[in-house]
Structures are given as structure tokens and as C-alpha cells.
Length: 209
Image (tube, rainbow, N blue to C red; front, side, top):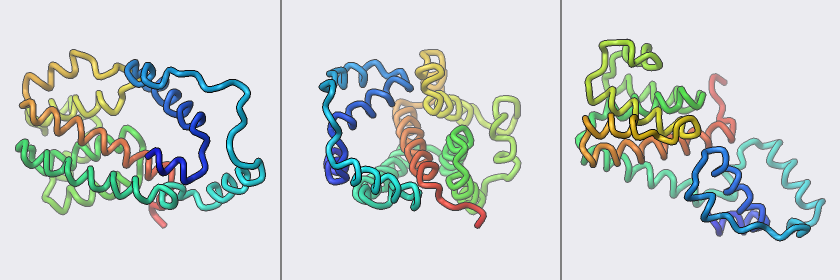
């Protein structure tokens, strides 16, 4: 990722500030401590104002910034997703549950592109449309097994990390039902799905056109 930001002409100090701000929003103490060094005050960002302005204007016109200079990180994310998929299979997680977790993450983040994609995938794999319909209210229904419910609870906690920092209550509730490998696979699945949601939302991938 460092190579990508450098190739795009981003000031290393700005990169650190973006990391710090993201960690502040999510309340990640570990990352805040890691990036705690203060940038030098008064230092100007690299690149001429005209160049920076033209880059911003181009990105605003295209609204697909993540497809261009970050092509390598995008491929890396896709490769990571494949590895996570293999991990869910190795952990014995039902492929239908995996799709439901992707859908639930995308519902919380409001990612229409990923919602459409994984709803279609779930239906193709044989998922019950009723389970997809009631997914936001899964805790109030009898459609979901004990394993499903534990996985959904953990996925929601990870997706809403600023709200509760994946509380011990949420984590322990999942760990009481799921194996260690399943907890790990679900945590990585939620992490990768949140990343894909942010890529699609930021890039304004077209839906319904």
C-alpha cells in the first residue's frame, strides 16, 4: 500500500494523518499508538497546487479512484478474499451462511453493489428468499440456527466496531458456539467484506443503470 500512495504522489505525512484519523473514528488504540508520531508542523504537501487540483478534479469526474493507481492493492484484496473463502470452507462454515454474512455486512454499510451481488449469489446457491428478507431482524426470527446466530452477531459487532469495539460479550457469545477456526474465518470474512463495501461505495459502482 505504501508503494501505491507514493506512486500517486501523496505526501507521507498526509498518509499518516489519514491512518490516524481512521483509527480515531474506529477507536483503535493499537493503531493510534503505532501512528502516534506527529507530522512536522508547517510542512507543505508535495506536488504543486495546480497538479494536486487537477488530480482532485479528475477523481471527482471519474468517481472510480480505486480502479486506477491502486490496481495492485485491488488485486491483493481479491486474492485475500479467495484465501478467506478457503478458510471458511476449511472451518466447516456453510456456504449459504457465508453469503448471508456478506449480505448482512453490506446491509449495515449500505452498499447497494455488494448487496445485489451477494443476494444473487445466495439465491443461486439455494438460499431461502425468506431468510434474506428477514436478515436485518434475524434475532427476532426462527429461521437461523445457533451457529448462524453466533456468526451474525460476531459479524455485526466487527462491522460496527466504533460502537462497541467488538465487546467481550459479543466475542464470547460467538466463541461459545463456534470453533476457534470458525471465529477466525468469520472475523476475516467480515474484515474483507467491509473493505469491499468501502471500495464499491467510494467508487460509486453503478447499480440499476
